[in-house]
Image (cartoon, rainbow, N blue to C red; front, side, top):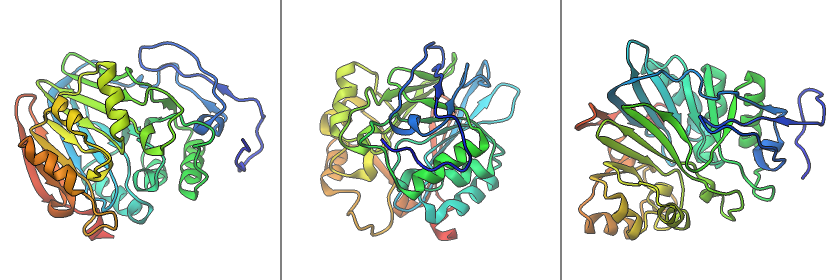
Amino acid sequence: MSRRSRKKTSPLAILIVLVLCGIGGAAANFFGLFSELDILTGASPLSNVPESFAKAAQIYYIDVGQGDSQLIRLNPDDSDPYDILIDAGTRSTKQELSAYLSELGVQNIDLLIGTHPHEDHIGGMAQIIEDFPIGTICLPETSEKMTPTTKTYESLLDAIEEKDVPVTAAKAGTFLLKTDEVTLQILSPSHQDYDNLNDYSIVTRLVVGEKSFLFEGDAEAEVEQEILDAGYDVSCDVLKLGHHGSSTSSSAAYLKAANPEFAVISCGVDNDYGHPHRETMERLQKLSIQEYRTDKQKTLLAETDGKTIQWTTGLHSVIDAA
C-alpha cells in the first residue's frame, strides 16, 4: 500500500512493539493503522492502571447524535477517577464533546478506545487527543484493503503522532483491566481480514462487582456469532447495542446469550438510517429488555455500586450544545 504523507521526514523502517496487558509478545504488521505510524510502543501499555478499584462506576452514554461515545469513570481506591472513553462521536460535535468531558471533571483520559475507523465513532478523537493527556489508545488492526483514507482517519493518525500517544492493538481475549473488583476484556476482533469495517469493532465487556456492561461498537451479527462460538462470557446487565440499533446487529441468539436487563441505543433524532430498526426493537420487546435511547432521553448515566444500577436520563446533549 502507499504510505500517507508525513509532516516530517522519518526513516522508512518501522519498529512495532506490542505488549498487550499481561500477554507478552511482539508483532510486525505493515497493514492498516500499524503501517501508518513510525513506532507503536508500550512495554506495558496500561502501566498506570491502579492495583485496585472500588466496586463503583459511572457510565455515561453520551448523546452525540448519530454516533457513539461512552465515558466510563472508575473509582480507584484512594485515587482520582480512572477515565475510559469509548469512541468520540462525529467531527461536527468534537469541541462540544471535549467541553462536556471537562465539565464532568475529566482531566485526562487513561484509556481511549476507538472501536473502528468510521467518522461517527472517531470523528472527535483527534480533538480529544489534542485537549487531554492520553494514557493509551486502543485501536483495531485493519487489513490493507480496509485501511481508510479519509480526512478524519488521517487527522487521528496525525494527532497520535504529534502527541506521541502509546498505541495498542485490540486482540480478542485480552484483558485491558483485571483486578479483583473490575475487569475490562476485549471480546473482538479476533482477526484482521473482515470485509466490513463495522466488523473490526472493538467489543468490550466491563465487570464492576456483580454488574456487567457490554459495549459493541458497530459489530454486526457475523461477529456476534464469532464471539459466541469462541465461548466468551457475554452475559451483561446493560448492553450498548451494536450499530445504533440496526437490524444487522443484535441478533436473537446474541441477545438471548447476553440476557441484559437494559439495552442502550445511541442514535440521532430522525436519522437518515431509520435507527433503531423495527426488527431490533421487536427482538428487545420479545425478551422484555428495557431500552434507553439517546435520541429520546439524551445523555444517559448508569451508576453502579457493584450490586445495583441507577439510571439518570435527560443529561447534557452534545448535539444541543453544537
